Length: 394
Image (cartoon, rainbow, N blue to C red; front, side):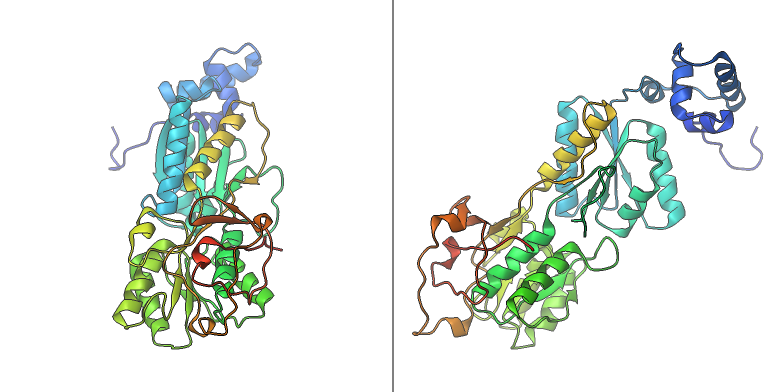
């Protein structure tokens, strides 16, 4: 009887491994009667099993066989558009491969809390996918023990990662770069930025892309406004920016922030895009139905989730090499919320026709993938929404 008032958790396969001084894979072989285990090792493991009262369940059995058909996703958020879409992609791909999916929620970046959640996920068996878009996710990715298969969904790395890091990402630095160049090409002197939090508590990849485009154009670099993740943060940031008549173009770190910014500009009596152009990020479903509809950058988060599972599946099944890689090319989606700066709409403005076919690859009526550089001072006429060019990040 436990007289301390605390319930002892059941022993895990890793507890047995620690007690026996072997790897959890060795414990797996023992409980599956694999012939490759030395008799002395088998006896030591069996003694630890008896001492700890370890009882194998179905999940542990799958792990012991080396083919656990399960994946646990560690994430700090399940509701924001990017996170939710990644989860959707993982679930779709896992279901097709007959894998079960569990979710472990990282409630904080506290070291002990992260370690406990990683341990729980590891005890389930199978592999892990960590969505590392925030400090808690980054901490969890770093806390996964080396023997456990893991794939990280990360922000665009500042430098190419080593081949031993199974990471996938969408190129959000390039996406922010292209969105900023789009606004500059409409004649805006500069572009203000409402930022989402960074996974590293430093400059995010999106902020870096915005800053690079301004630098190349020789445009002033305003101080970014921190906007958290949701519409309320965008609304507060929008009110700060709306009071400055010099603000004529705003890039938002996601579409939810842009929603709040649009509301704040409306309340301040500043028309969009007549006085201020606004662009978002992610192409969330609601962005096409706002008034005005939102110019944004589309990232394939669902495809990112599928790619993360595919990489993990290859690692678990030993059928694919670890290879960090970007997953998708960002797509600029031009809608009503961005337009030429007022000073660009003068009788002397040179009306530019559509660019040469080599400048863009048209994806739909209003969705264009950039493929070559443009001068930042190049201005479009009223048909700009169908003809836009840009360039890859340096």
